[in-house]
Image 1 (cartoon, rainbow, N blue to C red):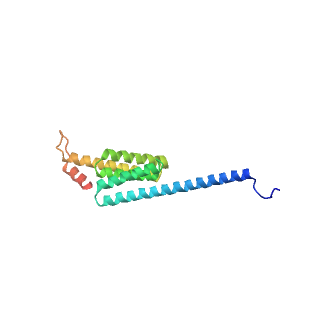
Image 2 (cartoon, rainbow, N blue to C red; image 1 turned 135 degrees about the horizontal axis):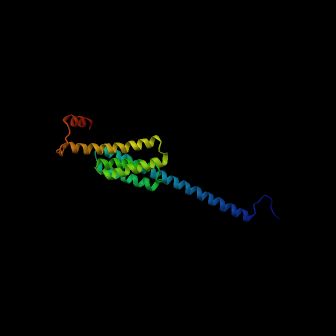
Image 3 (cartoon, one colour; image 1 turned 30 degrees about the vertical axis):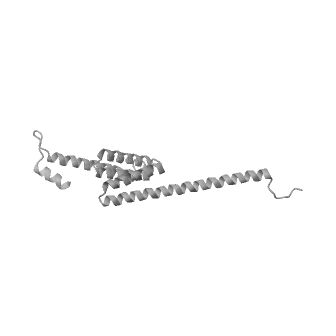
Length: 171
C-alpha cells in the first residue's frame, strides 16, 4: 500500500541533485569572494608599504612594492577597475622619483584612459587625472628650462637676469 505525502523516488533524487548543485555553487561563490577580499587586502598592504617606504626616502624599495601592487590589481580586478588605476598612479609617481620619465608618462596616460572609460570625459575624477598628467608635464618642462638656463647662450638668444630670477623663484 502506498503512503500518502511521500515524494516519489525519481522526484526525490532530482530534488537532491538540484539542492546539491545549489549548495556547491553557493560555496564556490563564497570561496571566490573570500579570495578576492584577501587579494584586495594584499593589494592595500602593498600600497601602504610603498607609501611608508616613499616617506622614508627608500624609493627603489617603494617602487618594487608599487610594481607588486599593480600586478596584484591587474590579476585580481577588471582591467578598468579603480584599484588598477590607483596602482598605476602610485607606480607612475615612483618612476618619476627615480627619473624613469617615459615609464611614468605611460602609466599616467594609462590611468587617464581607465578613468575616462569608466567615468566619462566630464567626470571630476577624470579632471584630477588630467591634472596629474599636466603636473607631470610641468615638472618635465621645469627640468628642461632649468637646464636651458644653465647652458651657454646659443647665438643671439639669451635669458635676461630678470627672466632667470623669476623662473628660479617659481621652481
